[in-house]
Amino acid sequence: HSERAMLEGYKRQGKNAHSNAIASIPRNVRLMYVHAYQSYVWNRMASERVRLHGLDKAVAGDLVLVEDVEDAPEAEGGDLVDAVPEEKEEKEEKEERRRRRRRKRRSARR
Image (cartoon, rainbow, N blue to C red; front, side):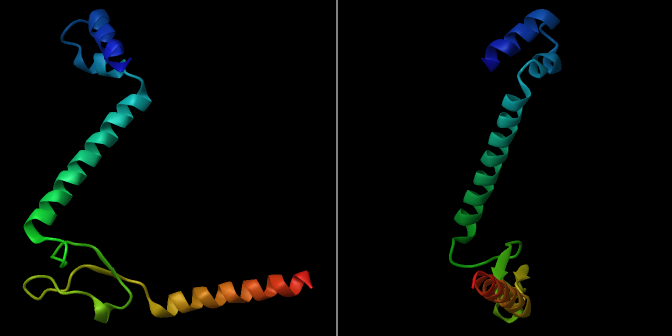
């Protein structure tokens, strides 16, 4: 369907009207092509990273989620890998708020 729309766009606008021909493809289909290409690029880069460095260690540039900054892995060369620490205090506070809400709901049911 989209190929036909593009060919009809060329037919209407002329053989050098590339942007008009592409614009004749429905927007949702054009976006699907863009997303597919983004996925292709991501997969190629991820495959290359795995080929070069394997999966068993973090390397500089990797984004690693760790519980505590002290637990952050070191990259080759001894540099600290970019880490996104989840603060233990925040995690504990969230859990405590959840527990309080549960207790409040239980007591409201009684």
